[in-house]
View 1 (cartoon, rainbow, N blue to C red):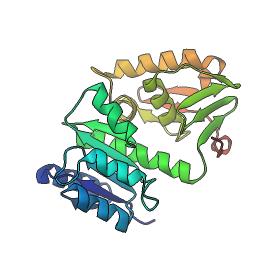
View 2 (cartoon, helix red, strand yellow):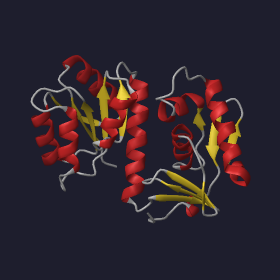
View 3 (cartoon, helix red, strand yellow):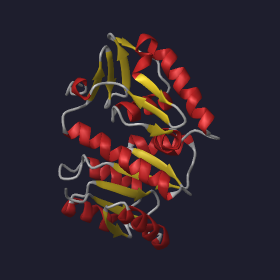
View 4 (tube, helix red, strand yellow):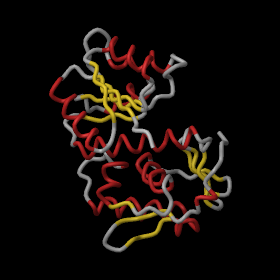
Length: 237
């Protein structure tokens, strides 16, 4: 299996090299660009599997790089994780509205970044395979529309609840630890603990109603999604 390539666009050399080392240790190839125009050109030429993009860059800021990427047919679908020291909700919303798939606030741990990278690549892999909708029995999870329905009725999930459900359902049968759920799905929440994960699961199960048993507890470890892989193949939008 070929190694996946991550493009890091960041003018902070020490941070970029730290990200590079962390990702290379996990089997990724990494390319570094130190400014916006160079990063954009590399993205168009090399077509990386994922881009880690700093918001504040010389030559062209991260928002403009992201906007141009999304308008480019050669690189428009590449997952983008935006990095920024700006932690306000408005800043996150602006970044996501410009087309970023995720928004990571500095400082962050290498483990958290790796969890985000894997989640973004997993989601893109499913979309490329035509799986824009995960189905398990009467439950449907719309990956693009960020909506969940049960027997056709929309469920009122919080964004954090959707992220937890999406994470579990995207890899049925795999047990996710509470730490993995925190890093991969609850990163925007404040003061998150293992107990917080349990509270989210309890609330999510309540909203799922008679589909609640799709989420199984693995004692002393975490949680897994019980749906069959054969159920989870739909290109509906």
